[in-house]
Amino acid sequence: MYMDTNASGITDHGSYSNLERIIESTKKDCELAEKYWDIIAVPGIELTNIPAASVDGMAKSAKELGCTDGSDPWRVNSRRSRGRNKPCCGEI
Image 1 (cartoon, helix red, strand yellow):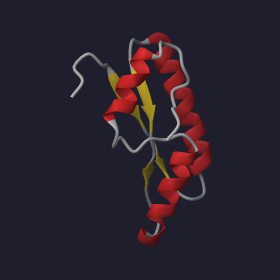
Image 2: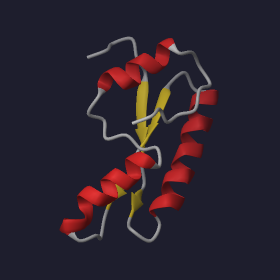
Image 3: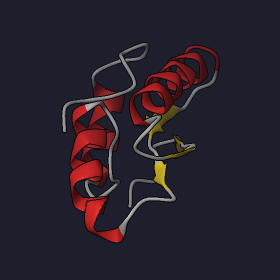
Image 4: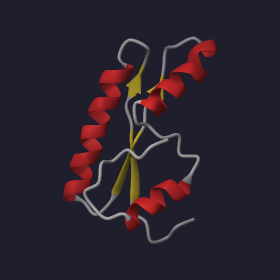
């Protein structure tokens, strides 16, 4: 756990039909949050109303579009050392 990091995940519900639009919107919200608040904002999407068999592929697409799955806390913590006002989505 990294006690010196103020981070927040910003997500919205999405499905196949709106995956790209939701992620792009969420990334903009992250950029705004980081500009005005002393936090690291991490974009995500809550995949809903999709067939279970499509989850892996859609999760991969979401990561490629800039979301994180939260499995690597170092990625969030290391953003603090890269300085403020960086794009909210690091490479996955």
